Length: 173
Image (cartoon, rainbow, N blue to C red):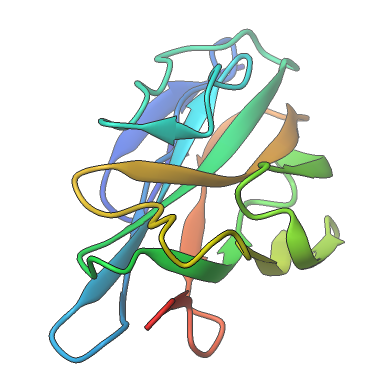
């Protein structure tokens, strides 16, 4: 039986094939600035925590496969990101999240609660306390916040969605 993965804006197939998930979150940072979080599904993590363009989500994975969902952030604020936070929901009957690996960029002041029973990755958050001159995630560039380890456990339609956890993404200014 196949499983289809979808996000708030796109549909992907998984199960006999498992697929990519991607969605957006916009949040206010400084006046007139926005922040965005996108999810990218891959069989293995991308090789770098920074990217000029988002890595491509893979189209398919085998049923019962393990894969990763990368959480990427960017802002239009030239000061860059200092912290990022989001809630991610998914179909608990179709997948489970076994762990989170934070990137080197957001590996300080981390917090997360995984509830596979309800399909929630709650308050996935981390901070970047590098030098103030180190503006990360300034559009068009992306900064990887974390990688979720995911296992497809059943066929069907699997949805990943991201929502703000209050302030969502903070900037350094």
